Structure formats: structure tokens, C-alpha cells
Image (tube, rainbow, N blue to C red; front, side, top):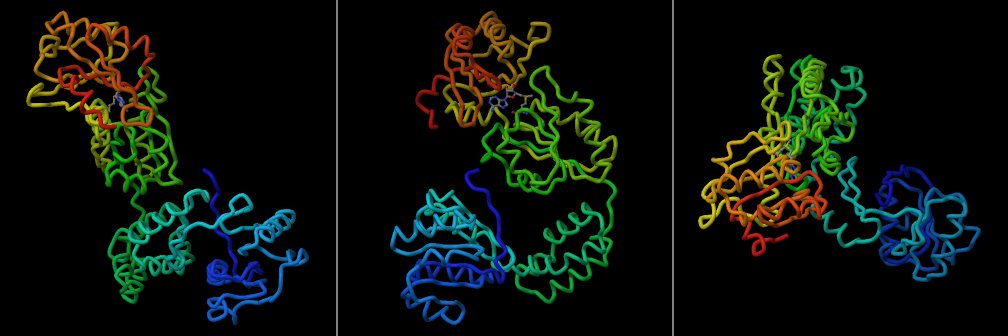
Length: 459
Ligand SMILES: C[S@@+](CC[C@H](N)C(=O)[O-])C[C@H]1O[C@@H](n2cnc3c(N)ncnc32)[C@H](O)[C@@H]1O
């Protein structure tokens, strides 16, 4: 993170702007709207400041002097004289007063973000002062996403905060109450501007067990996080990730994706990398049940799709036995994500009429698979968890009839920024993975579709 975002309460706080032009006018206007007591030092004032703000500011109609610097909560330099701007910055920083010099990030101790203003809701966007045009572009997108009536909903929540604490002393219960309000018809009333009805419905919700009752039992959401690129999450996955109280995640889920979960949700790592289970499967199943019985909304976040080599079935079986409500959210499985990002179509009319997914991990050094079925030149074979067993896999496929020259691809860390794709043949790949020092996670694709990769690779 380039800068640490904070929101400063400027109500009745003395703030100084040095400069009186149009740029200064924008800074003065914003600080006035946050309730600051503004002093403006400038021999002249722009028309905007004179017409719109003169009666709300203290104006000192002269040049800035060193002795002006003391006694302010925040200082902004917005003159067109670089020496004055620099001097203001030096003096303010020597007294530890936060200072912003417009368009000169090297002289600033704080920068001002692009703002989406919805009353008590303020959304600030910063690119660390490095790309203000992008910040403006993002602001436009956020403006479009968040209707202006959000301010009414937020104000109502603020006004009822103390009441909620009294009626619902438990924090988790309170959070659930507000979630229900935000997801349902009460929010709809506020967001469509029917404020009076919204207020009545909110008052009724405090009296209604539908909103206030302690459920006792929580819920488990088994969510597929896809192969790595956060853009491949589904909307539903993201929505549940942002509502959960606790998230259980494994090794294949990247930090980038994890950071999209509700910020104050507890995180429990139950990761598995090959035989190294941080928590054994039975322990994970029991933990899910235990947390749900404590009334928590639990996201079990899994790489790829929970029902494809993800042991999702085992986890929900246990939930079913224990009568815990659950949902399963499909994710993009690594076969699909890796093949697409590598430029390898898994089926193609001229190459493969079917595709088979298998798990290639070895048991006692042996891959117990249906080799005659897998060694079929007109299908694509996708092998999960096959890196260690790759030499055995290549050998067995050749032994059962595939050509030594059959193309094979290894996709390492598929869909992530450091994705690598290695192309070889069944004969050459065992050596290639050694020389290229291939690292997990990897997906293996065998079949003549791999020969299209050179042409179709689009990343
Ligand atoms: C236990 S399986 C989980 C599969 C997951 N449920 C899915 O649908 O993709 C783990 C295997 O998935 C594959 N895998 C998962 N993410 C991958 C990625 N980003 N790149 C390559 N392979 C990946 C690897 O073969 C890894 O050993």
C-alpha cells in the first residue's frame, strides 16, 4: 500500500489555504463542506472564491509570511509560486502539521484522494498521487455504481446505531440485523427515495423477531475461488465472501483473493500441499460443523471448483448429517482456467472430441489409472496433481499406445501473473520439468490440441 488512508474530522478545526486562485477554490470548498474554519492567505482571490465563499472564510489579503504557519490542523499550498509552496511545506513539516502542495507530491505529507460523496458515506480513491486521471476514471465508475440515495440509508443506520446497541447487545447479532436490513426491502425503500416508509420499516424491524432473533445455527458456504486470477471469481462467490464471519482457506487460494473477503472475518488456514495437511480432512469437516453450530456464517474457500478434486462432496456430506444449512458455489476449475490462459482449447473438431480429467498423484510410487482408456489419441487428457508422477504417467501412456511424439503441456501457476507454459512431447517432458525446475501447482494437458498453443496463445 503506497499511502495509509484515514478520514480526518475537520469540524470547527482551523485550516489554512495559501493561494486564492481556481485550484485553491476547489480545496477551500471541500474543506468548508467538511466543516473546517478556513483561513485563506492571498493578495487576490479568484471570482469563484469571491462570489461563493467570501462570507465563509477569513481572508488575509497579502503574501504568506513564515509566522502564518502556526495553529492549523491542516495546511494546503496552492499558489503558482514554487518557492512559496516549498516554504509552506518546509515550515508545516517542521511543526508536524499535515501539508498538501497541489500537484507536487514530493512536497506533501498527505495527498487528497478522488472522492465519491454520499453524505455520511465518503469513498476515497487514491493512486498514490501517481495517476490522477485513473483515480478520476475509477471515481466515475464508483459514482455510477452507488446511487445517491445511499446517503439516506447510511444516515438512517448512523441515527439508529445506539438503538441497535441497546436492542441487540451482541455484536454478531447486530451485524446480522444490519445485513438483513441492507439485503432486503428496507434498503430498497431507502434506495428508491421512500424515506418515510423506510424509517417506519426500520423501526418495525427492531421489534420483529424475523430481524432480531438469534438463529443459533449458522451456515456454511463452500465457495470455488477459481485457479488464481481474482477476476475469475463469480459474483456469488464475491458476495458470500463479503458477508462471512469466518473463512477457512487452503494453500491454492491466493492472498489477493483472500483480501476480497470481509475485512474483519476471521481467517483460518487449513491448507494442503500434497501430503502436508495443516488440518487433516476430518478436522476440517469437524471445524466447519463446530463453527456453524456457533452461529457463524462460514466460507470454505477452495481453489478451482469445490466438486472437482476438491473434496467438496465429503465436506457437505458431514454438514448434511449434522443438519447444517449449506450452499455450494462453483468455481472455474484449473483445467478450464489454465487451458484457456495458455491458449489450448480442450476440445477441437479436428483434434479431440472428448476431454478427461484425472488425478495423477502416485500411491506408493504407482499411478493406479485406467491406462487403456486414457491412452486415446482423439481425446484430451487433463491431469491434476500429476507433477511428481509425470515420468510414470508419460511412460504408461506410451506403453499403452500413445506416440512418443504426442504433445504435452505443463501449465505452472495457471492464470496468475507468473504463469508459465512448457510444451514438449511424452518423450521429452520428464527431462524438461527437471531442467526448467517446474514448481506446483501445475496442470498437465496431453493431446494433439496442445499443438495449437503456439498459434492460439493470447496472453
Ligand atoms: C487438490 S486439486 C484441486 C483442484 C481444484 N478443485 C480445481 O477445480 O481446480 C489441486 C490441483 O489442481 C491443480 N491446480 C490448481 N490451481 C492451479 C493453477 N493455478 N495452476 C495449475 N494447476 C492448478 C494442480 O494440479 C493442483 O495439484
